[in-house]
Length: 108
Image 1: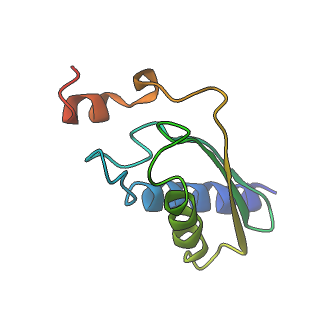
Image 2 (image 1 turned 120 degrees about the vertical axis):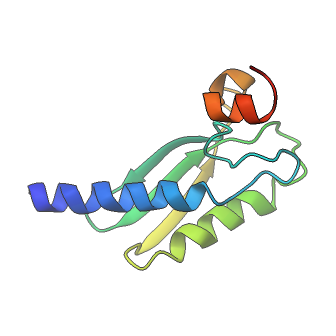
């Protein structure tokens, strides 16, 4: 059991590293540091579900960004399946951004 847990933890960390390579085209900060990723679920079968939001419901990348996230997560060898779910509850705000993102954007 602990080995299985370790595998999903390692995969979760790898997923976060991949998420940090995806940028919102309008903001020079990756989607993870922006706070657009609400949760990453990895089950024992290495099926992944990402719960994320967008900066606004009518965001120009509303169609393409979730697909890019899904494709990049699926490209990880251990991932069997990937699904991205978009939510606006709670709505995104600057409070969700990491300190690093706020610093990058001059908000600190």
